[in-house]
Image (tube, rainbow, N blue to C red; front, side, top):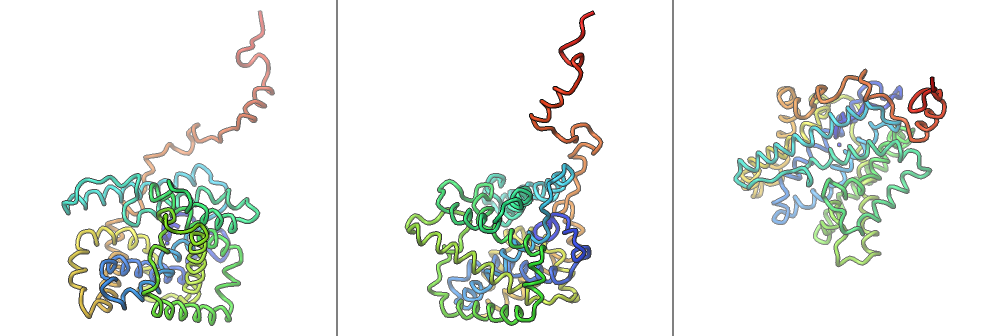
Length: 376
């Protein structure tokens, strides 16, 4: 979901990633459109079994795809001051701006005054999580088993009662394994998993099984199994808790990778272009739904719920990803706040020395420098 979910950070320096690949943009478009449809129909699922079945089936094609793509376009090199400034400008600033916009929209709706800084506003949690992942990646990459460590952390964090949706802490840890998988894809995994012919057949089988399971078991599936913004439910046994989460992560990974394998790799007119603006669709659609979502939900509450939701969701994604909307929304989606930072040549940007380096430097300098001066 680079700038989440498409351009937060520079692309990998590998030859394959030096130019934009249409397949990734096609995947972004699909994931973003499915997220819009999910949020549009969330209040209708209990009354429309068909919608609920397909919503369960599409779960692994939404946020998990964004997490993997974000990891794929991330770098594990140490972050220079310039990199940190870019992260602040492309992730933290939009997070704060969209939190303010959600506050204003809620005031317009008459829902009271709420500040969305500590608890992220609708969908903006991904910005904060991606900021943490990008800062942590250089250190994660130095682990011998980064994926295993991230999975263990995702399982353990559910037992900590105080880790929830505050600053997106729980989601950041739970979705970390998929981000790490995305990062590993650029190290040769993509060639092995996403280009071999047999993986195409396997991916089709996975998606088919995913849909069949959702159709056959949707009335037995519990949405609490998919929650990533809170600790484990208190009525779950310790064994059940980590087993459910591990199964959830495994399912999300397999379905997301299968989706990426099946998405066409060639450029598709309009679709590829809209996918390149996946960030705009992802961040702007909650504001639209806050304003008119109730009316749309009321209108969709009929036999036409499924085709209507697909049509409205796709149209909303197309409008929000269009060139005019990108131009208008660019100052808040992709802000350029260079005035916020000191110039590169400023002394404050020089590399900070560790206490050991400072001690060595003091030892090496002449005795007459500093407090000790030669007597006359």
